Image (tube, rainbow, N blue to C red; front, side):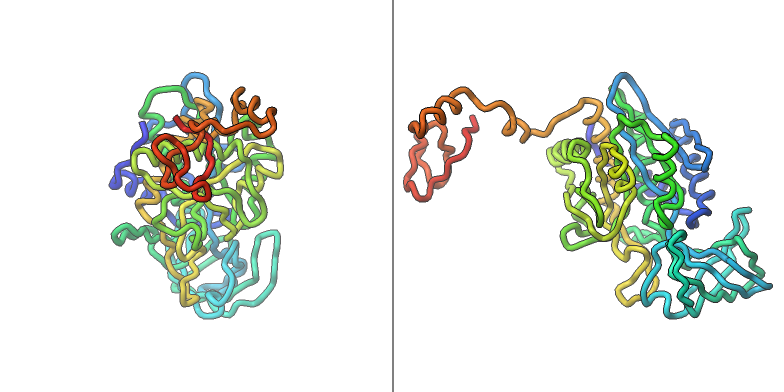
Length: 400
């Protein structure tokens, strides 16, 4: 049954998952995701790279795989002596936000931290392997060491009305969406084959998704759905609902895969749950990895204000997604899994089906008279179907 998840329960899941994270340093986020899934009764496993998998399977159904990444642009300590050193920028931080001192918190993979620090003085040193524009000086309030990592000094999760302000909505909000959708599917009955995959190192090169493909870790027959918190755009505003994403900056995705999201969106619309559909060109998502390797791939996104923490004044700011979009996104993902299980079609598909014999006969007749019942009643037609004003009447396929 299509329904919105409880807001308080969803926020609790989000808060549990929204922990400090960075490319190559996603351990805390992955552990939190596993804990939330297992609390919901969904078993988890990990691959050789630490990426987490969780599945809900009942009966015979077409498999659908939801993919979200657990990292966010951040910084890694490259050199350190006492409380000072150098950090390497990891991921998509760019522009004027790095041209002034930046407050951060330093953590270690051993569970240490946070240590407050300030970054300054970006030195350009482009490193495409790590999607890095360069290095910055770090001055910390306590000792730091190479291999530690730093995140912007922003709140992990803060609610203000319908706004959820996060240090890393991209993509911990997407991870929470998948966790909640799997929990919803686990509570219900009926055939389903839904898997969530929580990847690493997306921000530095889509590396986690690429490993899934290269190592054959995703079923070739599955529908792959990338779940992101992507840049809000004029054609996909925050508050307009989760986005059925037709493509990203580099690729359009697979129509047959998107079909199940569109079916789900139709069903949600029937109970008053709002979604939107758009081509989102604000960045590249993991769906592109799967598309270029021949997977049936689609995507969905939460409109994200201050994407990659870039505020309107070019200063670091929390990313913002809306609670109503997140709740609808959970419903959209869960309903898409049900639609895939049914191999469901959209309502409009009938207009692309077999041509009626009557139409074939009429067209072969070289312009035979159109029967009045084929004129849809409208402002330009009489109740009988005859046009009041032939210039105003429009021919449409008859709808009984």
